[in-house]
Each structure stands twice: as structure tokens, then as C-alpha cells.
Image (cartoon, rainbow, N blue to C red; front, side, top):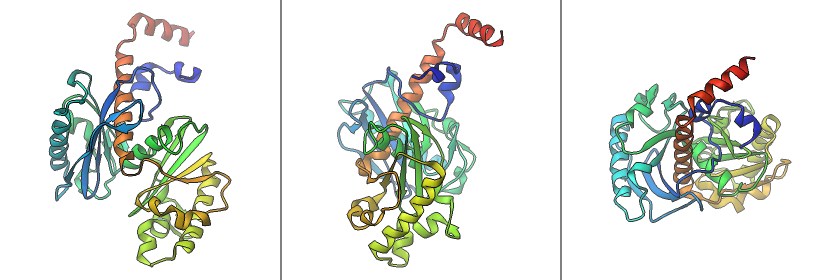
Length: 302
């Protein structure tokens, strides 16, 4: 933890949406990734950033209302907790990724899920579940995992993961700390919303050749680089499996552009990591000596 982190009240750190490394994480946590077609979960070894056992998937209900999705999450959680290497319930941390903007566990947008999620307090919705549950935007979860365990592991500065799919998701992680809800697919780019022009779905819609798509992506990433100056770009989403077809044409950015490494498990891994860190920070905050807090307040006011 840096000096600037230490100067913040621990309570403020505990409720902060950004995730950063703490030294008292459990060995395992559970991550659950809510998608438009499937909801999948797994037990994650936080020391390795890998799944322990197979992931478990259930199709996303129709309509994907908060109550219907919560029921599926509960079923997945119970299945995972029944496994031999599951975390104990009294030390259980669970992270849940939602396809929408998430601030303080409140969902403020809905992509590929029912509009009734908007303004839903996911923290309250999932409170009956076992363990301590935290929620996060889906692209942020995948990007956090890539920055800490995957293609960005050990990289200093800002690592920017861009997921190319139906839209464009993004996750900005600076020195291991997540800056949530960047939503860079909504930037204006060449007169259009970026994801309507440069997403994987947009390429498929017009049957754009891979080399042409690579040059388009080159222009988009150059535009993003002018705004955020990352030290590395990571390209995620299903299209990253075809990175050799388009990344050779991405040549104009100062920062290196590399494909994601964790593939389909990135969301689950990032969710588990975020959930474990939020639980650890909350426990640390609750353990602060009230007299110490009072002394720190008096010192700050002096």
C-alpha cells in the first residue's frame, strides 16, 4: 500500500469501487459472471489467478430480471459450495459481474439484461446469499483479471483492456488499481459512437476484411491513447482468438497492443479477486481501533 493509500480513512477504502492489492486475501474465492446468454461461475485460486475445477454455467433466464438472475446465481453458488475445494462459508467472498455500470453495488445501466436492472441495488438483491457479495461491471472484472494475472501482470502504469464483442467494453487499471466504469466504447469516434463502428459485431455486420478492421482498430486505439496514455493495451473478447488476423495492422500506438490471455475465464477470475479484496478491506475497516480513529481525526483537524 502506498503512502497516499494510508492517508485515507480505512472506511473510505473499504467502500471504494476501485480494487487494489491487500495482503490478507483468502486462498480461494468465488466469481460469477452474468452474461446475456449464460451465467457462469467458478472457484478461483487467488494465488494463481486460475480456476479450481470446472466452471459451472446456467443459461441466462428470459426475461433476465434481477429476481430471476439472483435465483440462478444462488443455484450456481450452492453447486460450487458443494465441491471439495470450496471456500468455507464463514470466510466466503463472492464477486458478481453485471453487464452494466455499477456504482456502490447499484446498477445504472443494462446491456443484454432486462431494463428492470437499472437503479437496482444489487447489494440488497444478493444479500440473502451466503458470504460477502460484491458486484462489478463485467468488462472491469475481466480487465482487472488480465492486468493482475494475465497479459498485463507486472506491468507498471495504466493497463487498458478493450473487449471487442457486441459492443466495446473497457477496463482501466493503474498500478494494479481499477478505475471502474470507463465505458470507452461510448466515445465519439470518426463521427459515430465507437462501438457502433469498431466493435466485433460492427465488423461482422459489414463483412469487413480483417486487414481493414485492423487499420480501423488502429485509429480507434490511437484516439483512446491520446486521452488516457496507457502503458499497454490488451485486446479481449471472443475476437481475441483471431488476433493474428488484425493486430499486425495495429501499428500506430506508442503503447504495445497484445491479446488477452485468460480468455473466457477472465470474468470469473476478476470477479473473485474483486469480491475477496472488498471483503478484506471491509474487515480491515471494521477492526480499526475507535481511539486510533479519533486520534487521527484530531491530528487531521490540527
